[in-house]
Image 1 (cartoon, helix red, strand yellow):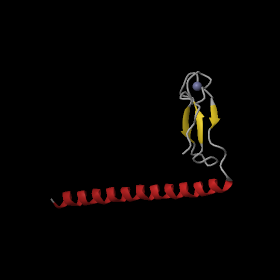
Image 2 (image 1 turned 90 degrees about the vertical axis):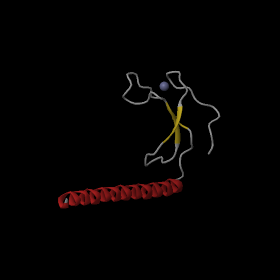
Image 3 (image 1 turned 45 degrees about the vertical axis):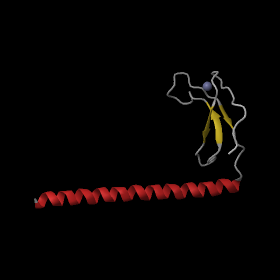
Image 4 (image 1 turned 30 degrees about the vertical axis):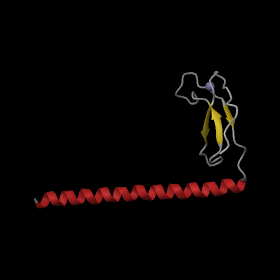
Length: 99
Ligand SMILES: [Zn+2]
């Protein structure tokens, strides 16, 4: 992956941080932002600058499709884990009832 040669300095004077966007409009697109971005800071810094060029509509579609698949798989795994915990709980209760 292409790495930045120059790291921009943001409004508050700190070197900006390279992060990756996971929004639906720009999945996987990297941008520079400040560590102090967000409302949890008293004086939030609004520095923002894209590093990667805009995604081609085709790449965006493919990426979004893949992201959706990953999320579906993660959900399925979560559900599976919950099912196993339930089974374990039921078996434990049954063992206690027999004892
Ligand atoms: Zn800043």
